Length: 149
Image (cartoon, rainbow, N blue to C red):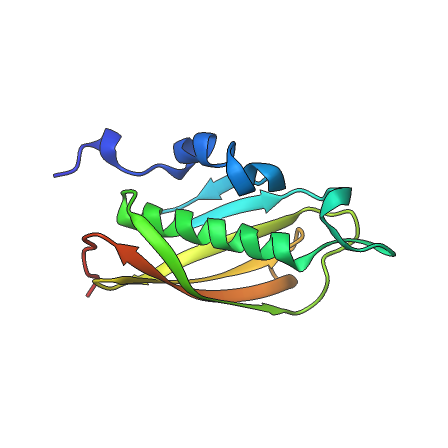
C-alpha cells in the first residue's frame, strides 16, 4: 500500500516544476486539480504575444500550457511520478484568446494502459464553455504503470 505522503500531489510538485526551465519562463501557475485532472494558468504577458498588432497570446505557449497540464494529470491519476514522453498532442483552435487575458488549461487523464496515457482537455480564457482550443494527446509512460480495466 502507498503511504499518503508518497502519493503524487500536483499542488506540491508545481512548487518545484513551475519554478524552473521552460515552465518558469512562461510563468505557468497552478490553479487546481482532482483525482485525474489538473488546471494551470498561462498569464498574459507582452513577450508571449503572437501578433504585434493584436494583444493575444501566441499558440506556442498555449500548447506548452496544455502539455504541462497533461503531464500533471497523468501523474495525478497514477498517484506517482514516472517518466513520460509526449507521443501525440493535437490542439484544435476554435478562436483566438481575448486580448490581454490569461489562458487556463484544464486536462484530464481518462485512460491508462501498460505503456500509454491518454488525455483530453481545453484551453479557455475564463469561460470553460467558450473554449480557445480543445486538445487530445497520448503519452508514453516509462516504467511500470497499472492498467485500468
